[in-house]
Figure 1 (cartoon, rainbow, N blue to C red):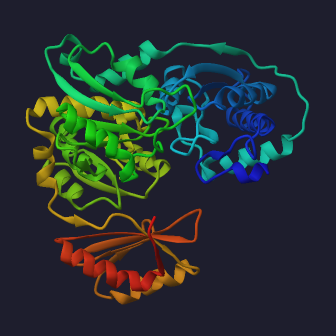
Figure 2 (spheres, rainbow, N blue to C red):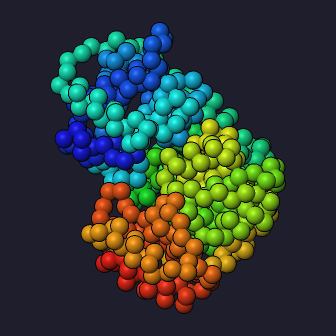
Figure 3 (cartoon, rainbow, N blue to C red):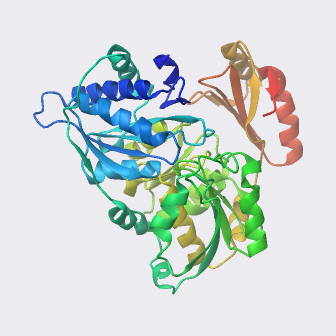
Length: 460
């Protein structure tokens, strides 16, 4: 049962079965033993920052997790009801040896889980410790042990605000700069984070949607990548005459943006627009983007005098590549935005502050600012069911012998007038296709052509 709650990048499952309080305690024991291994023979015990989201099951699960950590001699610093990026901040600000957020991100209300990081907020995934934690947790199941580590509670919201506001135009605070924004908190942690950080800004007029987050009910699924979930904020922008709209996911580490017309802006297009801000200050710097992104990103980075760097999909890889290149900024198609000034971690709050600040600085409608980056047509991600993923990938390679091919993440095929990437799902018998071309006719034709190589299309 315990094994089933461990995923590739975190712990996530339905509560109370299989993710029970007892399982959470065992996971705390496993994580505590892992952090003990990480610090070695150091006399000072590991210090772990712990927080939780708004889900009704979070208080009981985080209490059990803390108890497990403390049985292994870890000292726990409880930072409270916070968004997930807050944990990365707390780990670095307090110089902790690790951090754990109790959250199930964008999953439905009956789910919960744990996102973990080590010192300096480096993500813990399968290859960076999660398998070891699972092994240690399984060994600890049913063990009776008393907590020996210390526990303290710390309020870091003032320090967190100061940290995030390095990306906010100070004119918003005194009202010399004005903006109107519709914000959909998705009944998630943005309903806590946004007021705690931004309510003091006299120049920010906010239209609030779904900020209530204490009932365990989601008005819509807290996943802004699903277009239907963006309809409330799109409608609000148009009805209220807002300058833009932003929709956060459940734990507020991701967000999607819509323009003043209610038009959805892909996160790759947003990256293409925002990169200029960083490259103006740091010519030649590296801007990292995930390889599914429109080629408009690399074009925009080069045009602004920067170095475009492709990354594998996923926050573990994005953060690692950004750190390797010491780049100031990275954007992922899923709505994660990463900042060197945030220890290379992602931050929904910083992305929110940055978009508001850059929009008011430009003095033009957001749709107008994004239009130059809409020079290509994208298929969007299309899923295919297939039993033999490697064979399908090989068919794709063989079908285009004249193409430039790389295997950074799946198979990317680049031809003169179009390109595509096909990646295998880690958890399902699926291949995921993203394709881009100069116009809709080309994209439609090439999608049909490539689809014949990949399996049965799944429309969901």
